[in-house]
Image 1: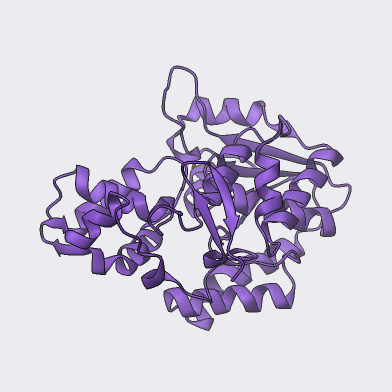
Image 2: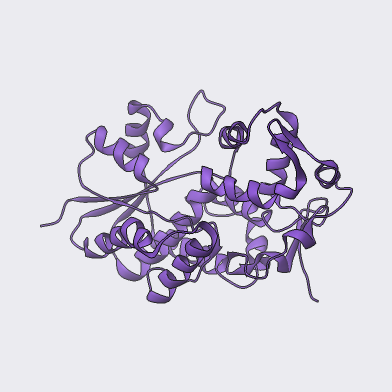
Length: 314
């Protein structure tokens, strides 16, 4: 007989924290970062996992065995958890988590139809101006979040699946339209996460996206002595990205030609000009194999002045 509750969490830290707090039930950890690399709508299919492995192999040099051990084996455990009374999703407010959440709900819609599904989503906390991740919540706060978890209606599930389809489409322009209208109250952090996602396409002003500009801005405003200090500042000061160290390390490596030194951290003349929108770094970064969801990253430009996406037609 299966457990009464199946918890699907956003990462190992959350899983370990919930176990430490003696939450009952079975636990599945969703070990993916679908906010990066190419995605397809058919979550969990052979095509989906082959595409994801190709991304991790080419971008982060992840071995096939590590991908199987870390991600696929946990996914197979999820597939085998068919006897449960309720599925509880544990995700956070940031872009990283919100995209993973959409994919999980899309999978549940297809393979766990009519199962009761609820959502615990951390972010706003009383008497705090800072949005908090799940592991930043105190024991009483996390129990309060759990007590007030949101039961997802079929409309909620259909809506999340629809947004996932748009995220995986070849054009992000329809997704942009969604962010300009009122969205469901169930997914209170999704709209800002999607706006953050759209700004990850290269900017019209200097060819860098919001993540890359954030790296240069952080390097400039803080007197940092090493690359590790820069990495630490990025992790601490990020607001809606939710990225980990390997993602920022990859971005820093791509922007290396804009730095004069990492000991101390200093931009060179070109880096300063790019940051001031006096020149563009688009051509140097352009990569036809770079995707955000289902869209080619360098086939669209985001105008910061007009807050709109533009498609490159030639």
